[in-house]
Image 1: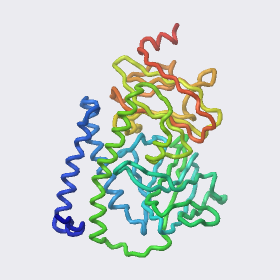
Image 2: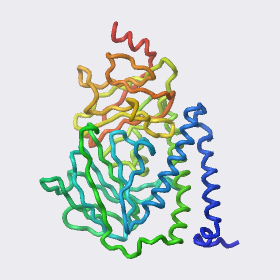
Image 3: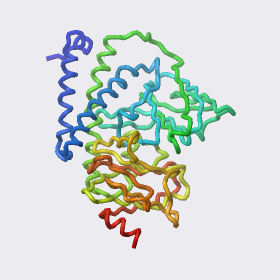
Image 4: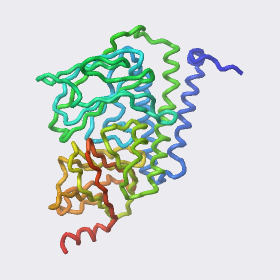
Length: 372
C-alpha cells in the first residue's frame, strides 16, 4: 500500500499519532539490557528522554530554518548530551550548504572558542561529520574584539568557515578557565541569500515533526552503546577512539579519554597523570550513565588546568568518591549520589598526550596514605 504524503498524514492526524507512538517506544532505551537498574539511574533515564524531547523540538522545529537562522543550545545546565563540558558554553545553529552566511561577533574574554560546520545528527548512525573548523587564532579580530566570519561552501577572502553541500548545522564551543569571571563571546548570524518566506509551511513542518523522535531515540541509543563499550574498561581512562568522537560531533582540537566509573560505598577512584607540557587547557568531569554531566550547579563534579592543585612533581592527583577525603586531597570530585556513570578527560590543543593512571582504593586507606 502506498504511503500517504507527509503533509496529508499531518493534516489527518496520522503523523501526530506516529510521533506519540514513537516517543512511547523510545522508553525502551531506559529499560535496555546493560543499563543499571538502580532507582536514580532509571529516573534519570526517563528524565533524559524528556530533556532530549525538549532539545529535539527546538532543533527540529523551533530553530530549524536555515534561511532565517538563530543560535540556540543543544547542551546546557538542564539538558545535556554526550558528556557535555561544564566549562563550556555551547551554541548550535541550522544552516544549509547551498546558502551563504555571515557571523558577526565579539570574542569577549573566553579562553577558547571554536566554530564548526557539520553534516548529520545523532539520529540514525549518529554521524555528525565535520565539514569546516575555525578557532579564535584563525580569525582577524579588531582591537575591540569584533570580527566578521563568512560561512559558505565557496571560498572567501578573510575570515572564512568552509561548508560543503551536505552541511546542515553549526556548532560553537566556548571554553572557560573560570566561567564566573570571563565574558563569553557574543555571536549573531544571518543568511545572505534567503529565498523562501519565514511563514510556516505545512509540508516542511511535517518533515520537521517526523525528525523529532529519531533525534530522541538516536541520541539515547548512541550513547547507551558507547557506555556498553566503555564497560570494557571500568574505572580506567584509556584514550578514546578519536575518529568515533569526531563522528559524534567532537572538536578536532580536543583529545578525548572517555570511560565508565563504578564505585561501592567507601571506595574512591584515584586518577593521576602529568598534564601535557603544551596544552591550552584540560579538564576532567563526571557524568551519569546517560552521559549527562552531573549537576555542576550544585556539586563539585569537574576540575580543570586552571583550578586543580598540582603535586610537588607537577603531576595531578584527582580523587573521585561519594565523601570528601579531606584537605590532603584538594582535587576531590563528588559523585552526587551516584554509584556509577561516565567520565571524560579532555586535552585541548595538546602537543603530547601523557598516559593516565587510575586505581580504586578504600577511602580509609587513602586517608592513611597521607598520615603515614
